Image (cartoon, rainbow, N blue to C red; front, top):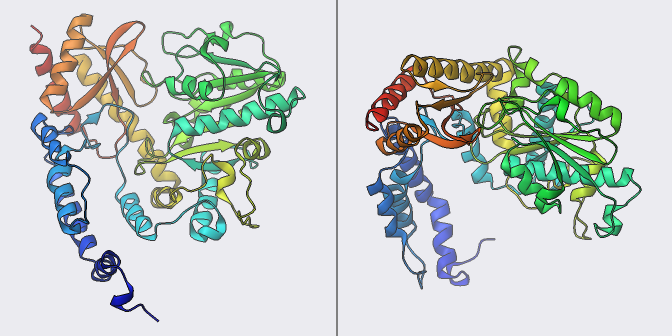
Length: 468
C-alpha cells in the first residue's frame, strides 16, 4: 500500500515524482549524448575560460531544496566544457579512455546502486566479481589459489598486497600481527628499486615503514632493478617489483628475481598498474615471464583495459594473509557460503566496480584484450618514430606503451612542454628522468589513431618553434 501525499514530506514527494517520471535521467542522458558528440571536436584539455567559468559553482550552501533540472543543466553547461577528455590526443598521465560497453554497463550499475560488500547485499555484484577473478587468473596465468579484490586504484591495491605481505612475513617470524600489533614486532626488510612508483612508498608509510627503512636497489638506465645490486634476501623480506615503469614502461626481471625470492622465503609484490596486462598478449607476455611466482599483484582496469574510473585490482595468492590483514568484525555482518567481497578489500561499503570490469572483459574477450594491448604499443612506436624524424630525442626502449621525449636542451624541453599544454592540441605530462626534465607520453586510450598522433607530432614541432 503506497503512502498518501499527506504522509510524505514535500521533498520526498518531489523525489518520488522525479523517479517515476524519469525526467532528470532523461535530461542527463541528453546531456551525455551531447557531450559525446561534441567531445570529438574538443581539445583534450579545457581552455582557461572554461576553467574560469567553474567559479559559477562558488555559491553558499542553499537554505532550501534546489531544482533538479537546474542542477543537471548547470553541470552540463558549466561542468562539461571544463572536463579533461581522456580520448585520442590525451597522453598525459597513464589514463585510459572508456570502452563504450563499459560506460553503458556503468550507467546501468549506477541505476542499480549496489553495495558490493557482501553477497547478501548484492548477489549480482558478488557473482560478476567472482567471474572477473577467474578470468583475471586465466589472462595473467596466475595460481588457482589467487583471489581478487576491487578497490579505487593501484595505490590502494598495493596497500592491500603489502598489508598481506606484512602479516605473512611477521607470522613467519613468529609474530601475530592481529593480536600483538606492530609495537615490538620483528624487523621487516623492504627491498625495492629506486625507480618504483611514488605511491608504493606512500603505501609503505601508511603501513609503518619509513623511507629510511627501505633497502633501495639501484636501477639501470631504463628503470629496472639492477640484479647484481639486490641484497641477500631472507624470510623477513618484502620485495617490490614493477611491471611497467611509469616513465619508460620497463619491466623488472621477474624470471630471475622471483625464484630467488621464493627460495629465500621472501614475499614478492608486483606493482603492475598498467604493465601487468602485457601478460594477456602473446606478443608481450615475455615481459611478465616469472611474474606468476610472486605472492601479490596490483593492477588497474581503468588504465590499459580502458574501464571507466575507478577500477583498481588487488590479486593475492595467499587468501588467508589478505583476509587477515583486511578483516573486519561485527555481529551484524552476515557472511555467506558465496563470495563476500569485503574480505579482499580494506573498505566495506563500495560500489560494484566488477560490473563494468566484467562487461569490458566479456566484450573484448582474450583476443580483443590482446589486440588492445598490442595497439597501444604499435601507436607508441609510431609516435616515437614520427618524433624522431622531427629531430626529437627518444630516451627509452619502447617495450610497451610509454615514450620518453626530450629536446636538444633541458630548457627547450621544459618550454616545449609548456607550449604544448597551452596549445591544447594534445596534452602531455612532464617528469624527471635520470635527473633531467622530459616530456612523458602515455598511450593508453583505445580511441587514439595515427591521425591523432600526426596532429600531436605537428603540435610538438610547432611548440618547439616557440622556444627559439
